[in-house]
Length: 366
Ligand SMILES: Nc1ncnc2c1ncn2[C@@H]1O[C@H](COP(=O)(O)OP(=O)(O)OP(=O)(O)O)[C@@H](O)[C@H]1O
Ligand code: NI
Image (tube, rainbow, N blue to C red; front, side, top):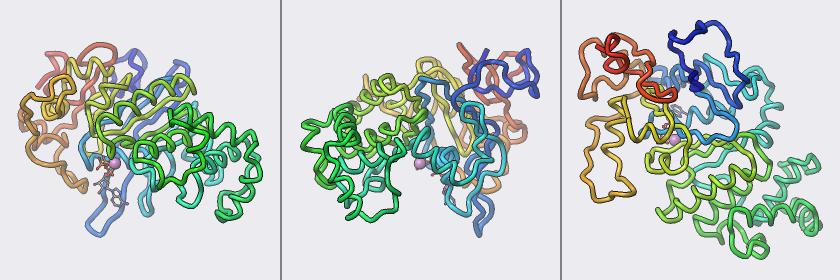
């Protein structure tokens, strides 16, 4: 049935039986990531389940501060110290990443797992041309490269001597694939000579040049203007097919998700509250948070519509004293919502689930 990692006990198999389906590319189960701080423990990811199948684009949406980036960092094994994963599991192709050595994780990050960020300037090396750094990624992936820690001068010498190399040709192909015009000459430019949109494209080219199984894109287009955003997202979708890469697309922008994703998970205050096919989620949002989020987001097809913001703010993620994290902001909350942990319930087509006591089969609703 549901491929969304349902945790309710209503399916034929009980909770302790492992999935009998072929393993998903990425399976996250009960993940919990927290930061000790002087004010207390920040639980940024709180018992989260999520799967990404091969060839899928899964969207993760939620307001600022809901834990999306920490979730991504957890998968990549790059949670900031002293934050740590304290529970659950992350499996890639059925293999847990949590017991891997740092060296193995490092190799995974440049290979099967790749991530792009909102601001490519933080990820692109300002001292190397765009072509040089993509070629370097290609070479590292092919296991013929030099150590990443070589100084720029030396790297340039090594790479400059090999401009006719396979890696350089591949770099140009990658720049062409992400539709950088005149890729061959632009490959010789430094990152600061690129526009914001082109830098983001270069970043995508670099991330895909290691042919990852999974690309995690954390707000990849947020800093760009709307037209460029749309172009880049279209390209991401095409590239997914061309490179056979699955994508986890993180954004607070629902319009982005509706454009490109196959499935969507909605995150609020460290928890997933709703999961569904993208179309189903927009046609039939069920969790009051998702409904509020949709009512507060401008629609691409009706930008003039009146918007209703959700009142209040995402809570501080320290010792949240109520069971449903959304209860204090929820127009439908009852006393029980503050006391009883909401379980996932089927609320629509194709594994559409929401964690809300006021939803689900009529006999279960509060
Ligand atoms: N290094 C850290 N130390 C302490 N708390 C942190 C750290 N990094 C993140 N957090 C906390 O974890 C929570 C989730 O943050 P996160 O950046 O994952 O949110 P987000 O959903 O990605 O938001 P945005 O949309 O603004 O990027 C926040 O309360 C944040 O303050
Ligand atoms: Ni973030």
